[in-house]
Length: 270
View 1: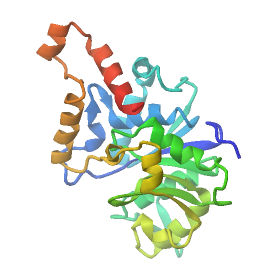
View 2 (view 1 turned 30 degrees about the vertical axis):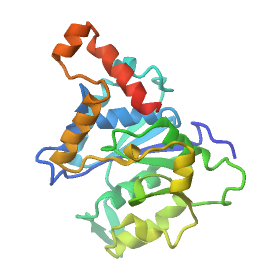
View 3 (view 1 turned 90 degrees about the horizontal axis):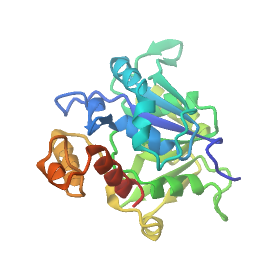
């Protein structure tokens, strides 16, 4: 099985409540570009259909920003974005169980994963959380390319990273075969995604494979709190990114656009 951007879907989970954040983290940006838009461009290297799974509350903001995606594309010339990608915004599923409609309140990311896989056209999807700003092309290549490598597990249902701190359930490759297990667990109010792992044919990307492919722990940094947000800003600043109005940019006479592009490439192509 060869892997190309026609037989993989991309799923971005963007429906969090941001209860620990103080404001809606779907609106967190790198300069003027929301993080979920950044994920769209990264996934465009591997997928021609990208689904953004969200809540009704976040839908208006996401749709509004997607209207600017062609303008944003000038910052992402190093990706495979063509402008012909199919990008859909889909609300979290309203879940039926035993004939009753369940809003699945408190279900969290498992509902987004279920909704994304249910609506994906391809068997396999790369799944990313919207709040992981330092995902690299190298990591996405390892997830996608695993299906084509010699000696892979036949008919795997998922390819999941297990780094030093444990499973990275919101950054992985999942197939539609996971749907029935996700559905069963949601119906039983079992909302940890990892609880389906004993039931599926799973291939683990362990620390040794991560090290071999030079995939660092920064890939798995996500923004769950205000403290994480400031750490995110600090990481950008320490790697050459300067915010609007910076005196350093003025002294160097480097345009903000060029600075952003160079710094973004440094992270994504590392």
